[in-house]
Image (cartoon, rainbow, N blue to C red; front, side, top):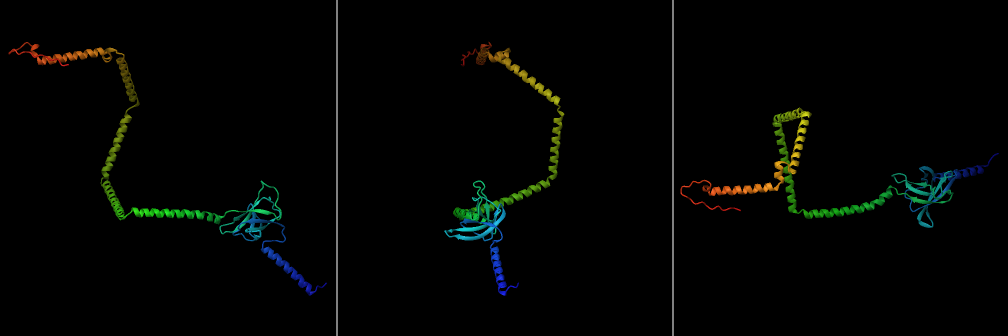
Length: 314
């Protein structure tokens, strides 16, 4: 059976059109031979997201972005269509998180399953909740204004401080500061010279220092020898004698407190002290009278001098 030329051309044209449609959809990330489910997601912005970018679940690619358009009902929103493999199931209340895939700004969509609140499986054509995960660029953009404000505040404070410093350091103060720096430099130089002199002194007297150190070591050894020569038995005898001495002193103290013996009575009996005091006073009076009137007690007079009257001192 022979086909006409027109039929062959028509058949080839149909095949060519089909191949073109397949190639076009393939380049857009749509495989006509795969059975996929389609979902729509709303976002306020999709910076860096492109058609054919991956859709993942737990880090595993399960689909791709099919189309990105403005929402005809609200142009402030963007509608992103994704296709997901049929054998991948997740709840209808799951969210679609837009995140950065790297530092260069590439974006992808991650399905975050919500197994706790709803067990209804998402079906083809359902709307998923869109969530934007802040990337490095967003974080920098959020922090940068605050950092800029802080830098501006620091710069203002620095200007104020510099102004105060300029006001504080007038010409006279600057000259005094220069003088202080110069004096400090001279002091450092003097310390260096003194250190060098001390070093030279030590070097010149190193032999004497060695002898002194040797003598000190010898003295230390002698002290150690004397300490070692005192046996523990001698120390026990000394300790025993000291204990006996303390006991005797305690006994004497107790005896004195109890008025035992002459010493105890002298300490504790007031009458003996009073009698001794009176006797001392009488003895002082007698000595004074003898000095004034010695003839009263020694009967020897050449001129018959009259005795002086003794005046008693109270």
